Amino acid sequence: MRANRKELLLQVYDTLLAALGPQNWWPAQTPFEVILGAILAQNTAWSNAAAAIANLRRNGLLSLASVCGINTPQLEALIRPSGFYRQKSGKILAFCRHLATKWNGSLEEFLALEMERLRAELLSIRGIGPETADSIVLYAAFQPSFVVDTYTWRIFSRHGWVEESISYDDLREFFMEAMDPDVHLFQEFRALLVRIGHLYCRKTPLCQQCPLCVFMDA
DNA sequence: GACCAGGCACATC
DNA sequence: GATGTGCATGGT
Image (cartoon, rainbow, N blue to C red):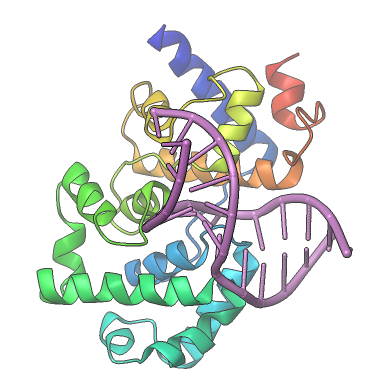
C-alpha cells in the first residue's frame, strides 16, 4: 500500500515537474523574510503579500531587530496591502517577541531545533497554524516537513487519492510516510502543487485538461 | 459586484 | 470533533 502510494506521489511529482518546470521556491532572500512572507501570505494572493514585503524592504524592516523596534500602527500601515493587516501585525510582533524572550533574538538557534520540536514550538505561537509552521520549517529552517495547503487537499481529494474529510495532519502524514525526507523534493513538490492549483484547480470538480487530469486519470 | 487568494483563532453545538 | 464566523486587501 505504501509502495503504491510512493509510486503515485512520485508520478504526480514527475508529471508536474515535466509540465511546469522547477518553481524554485521560496522567493525570499533570508529565513526571516520567509517567515514574514509565510504570515503575510495567509489566505491571501501572493502578489498582495509581496506588496507588503516590498513596503517593509523599502523601510529597512526585514530584520528581526528592526521589526522589534516598530510600533503597531506603523507596521499595520506597511503591511496593509496583504489584507487582515490588524491580525497579521499582531502575529508578526508575537513571533518577534517570542524569539526575543525565549531565544535571545537568535533565529539561527531556534531554526536549528530538531524538526518536530521546532514545529511544535512554532505552533505554540499565536497566529502560526500548521501550514505556516510547516512552511517555516521547510523554507526557512530547510528541514523536511511537508507543507499541506488548500490546493494539496483539493487536488488529492478530487482525484480520489485521499478522503475529502482528511485532516491537515493526516494529509501531511500521507506524504511524509511514503516519501524520503528530502528538503528539495518537498520544497518543489509543494510549489508545483500550488502552481498547478493556481492555474487549473479552482471551483470546478476536476478540470480534465491540466497535466494531472490528462496523464494521471487517462 | 461576486468570487477568490500559498489560514488562523475562537465560539458554539 | 465538526462546523460556522470574522478578519481585509487587491486582482479577475
